[in-house]
Amino acid sequence: MKSSEYIKIIKSAKNALEEYENWGEDEIYMKKISSASSLDNSFAAGSLPVSQDAELESLKKQTAACRKCSLGAHRLNCVFGEGSSNADIMFVGEGPGFDEDHKGRPFIGRAGQLLTKIIEAMGYSRESLYIANIVKCHPMKDSSDPEKRANDRPPSPEEMDSCRSYLDRQIEIIRPKIIITLGASSTKGLLKNEESISVIRGSIRQYKDVKLMPTYHPAALLRNPNLKKYVWDDMKKVMSFLKTGTI
Ligand code: URA
Image 1 (tube, rainbow, N blue to C red):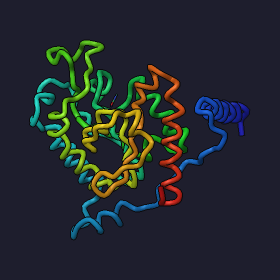
Image 2: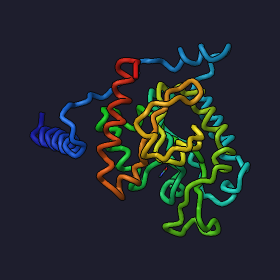
Image 3: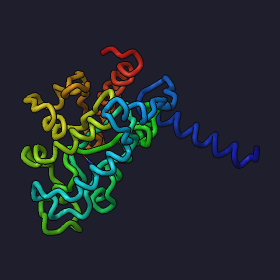
Image 4: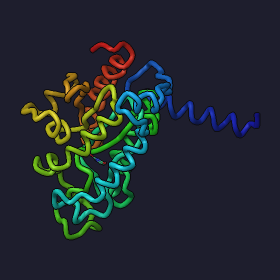
């Protein structure tokens, strides 16, 4: 092997170990490779073997055409979600922000970069999981100008309710083993809970027939890095649940 290739490997190992240190973690989590085949799942779901990818693609088109609430009329792009149609874990955020609206992809801004680090520290890649939001269109304070910065707002309960059928269908198609809600909005949108995120986080709940772990939104960690340890505790519970099948 060329020495430049060795240097590349050592550099990426060094970065990974530094990241573990950031999370106060000592154990190395290996990348999980999903062995379940999408075909097995699609046979189980119905009489015709329509692939999960094809179902998600068709749902993505329906979602892009949606005007059930006013968000659809003002956003630049519908941010449907992305990742593996066979994912064990589905992250659900609040809603697209400026960067996501411009690119049509979830969690690609600063909060998204932190989410990617969390995912990698858990031993996964973004592509092996599924990342979505409780609403698929950018909720803006001033909806007349999608080019304006610092114009994001949380979605209203009505907006979350109008969009929920799309997320529900994504969950039915992907059938994740666990949903991780990021922040108060998506947690409340799904669980309709009264408790604050600081109280409900870290306790495994149920959404329909899927386990659900509420945790802080990565944007909250950017504002207050002291919250990182709580998110990491929550992610360790998720990893243990996926490994043992028990809570
Ligand atoms: N925050 C979210 O909740 N979702 C995104 O996609 C980006 C930022």
